[in-house]
Image (cartoon, rainbow, N blue to C red; front, side, top):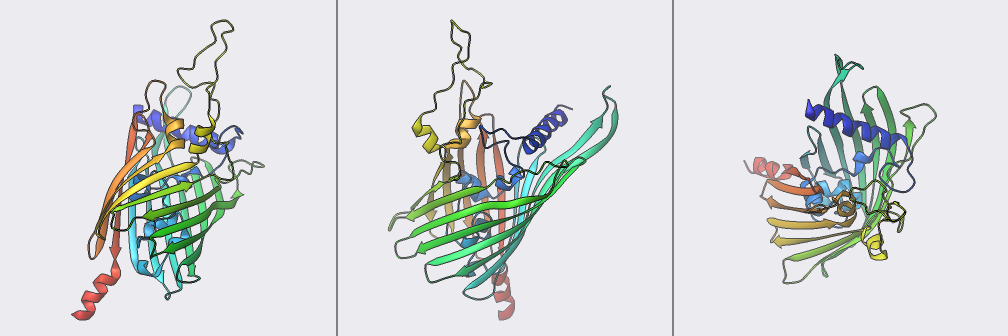
Length: 356
């Protein structure tokens, strides 16, 4: 019963945030926010952003279609993340290389909010309902030259929250510059630019969670470290943090009794746009990653303790025919998520079959 109430509260919050405009913050001003809840282990381990990691992993293309490349040909993947209570998220995808220049991918992203018990005003059970959101995407990338690639994704979005339904379409546009000699990767992405086609309520068309990002990754020669920095939500410079009057532990002025507002420094405003991560690359077969998301830490900290909120970590193991990865991300001081990713390299099985 407790978990059901907890998930009902979360679902109510999701719907309210999807149906109102609170101009002081990014949470609650956009619909389809599940698009930014990635179930991939590596993305979660690196703090939530991996738009510059130019490795042959089809999962990375969900954030930046320009990372789609020929080396991902015939990769198939499945990702699973356990979120709060019975809420879970996942992603399944496939990549296909037309030739050395043109590449395609398709996938489905989902969030399942679970089963709920419907009750009347007297607490009597009168049935049940479910809630979930889905994104089916098609991606394409084109290699412009040996270093530069651009890509785009078309997203078909469906949201089902009890009797409320909504459909929308969106696109991602990305570009990636990768210099193999200098081990440098630069990326720019415009994510979730789109429109709500059918609304939850008549006459209440809402905006999608647009995100403009730029970033870089640098691997050092004769050194296993790779560092990455991503600047996100650049369409709202300096406006990600806000004064929260209901934040627990707020101080009050002894004379007036008024709440003393939080002091948000310029450094905090800048850091809120940044996601910093590092990876230890042990050859081509293993990585260990760590990430830090300052916006998540600031929003999810408690009055008395922040613990590991905003931090993430994980690792991946690559074998000849498949790849496994685990990632953990602290979305709140009270809990962390667990993500698992699995990639199969179909071409490796085809090689064995052809030899036989």
